[in-house]
Length: 113
Image (cartoon, rainbow, N blue to C red; front, side, top):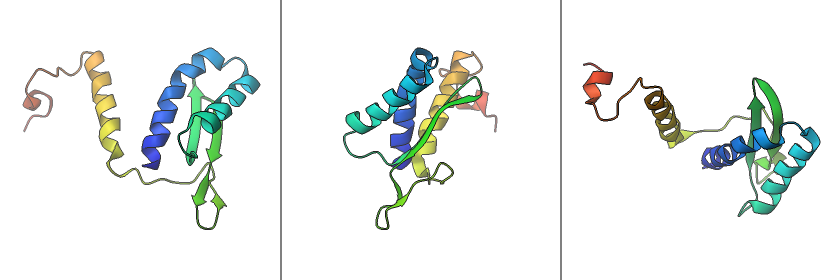
């Protein structure tokens, strides 16, 4: 569940990079404001935004362990469980856009048995 929230938040910020990538302090303040004010509940996760291989924004929010209130760190690991399905879907659709996969053809054309 954490990764779903993280992915949704990260995807919503992708358009943000083009608009606010030039003004780093404003960029960080706007992202912090969105996370604090627009989340339906306190956000618990890590946000990393890169552009052309350079980190534009990175911050850990919330707790690694809610009971002990141990803060989350940037290098903490998350279990992604079934969220790989969404990631795989996006990657397949990117290949469709490139013309490398045809969604209308039988699966055996892509993965021969």
